[in-house]
Image (cartoon, rainbow, N blue to C red; front, side):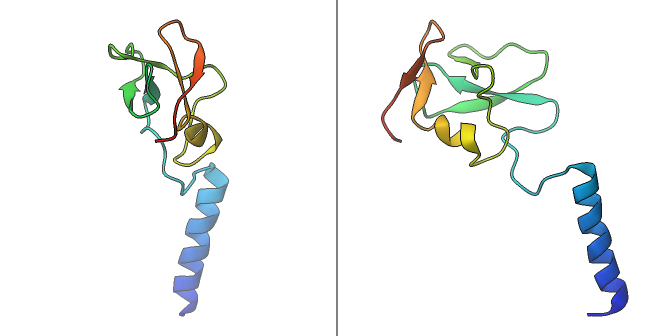
Length: 94
C-alpha cells in the first residue's frame, strides 16, 4: 500500500474516533427518535424530533432507548413492549 493511501486511511479512522462517530447502524437518523408499537414487540418507527409518536406507538421507557441496531436495548425490545398504560410486558420471541 502506498504511504499516501495508508495515511489517508489512518486519518479517516482517527477522524471517526475523535468525533465520536460510530460505524454501527443507528436505529434512527439525526433529528429523529425511535418509538415502539404498543402491545407488540414487532414494529417500530422513527419520528422527527418535536413530533408526537403516531397512534398505536409510544416512546421507549426512559433509560431503555435503543441507539444502534443490535445494542442492549434493541435486543431487549425483541421480547418486551409496553401496554396501553405504559407498563413493560414480556412478549413471545419474534
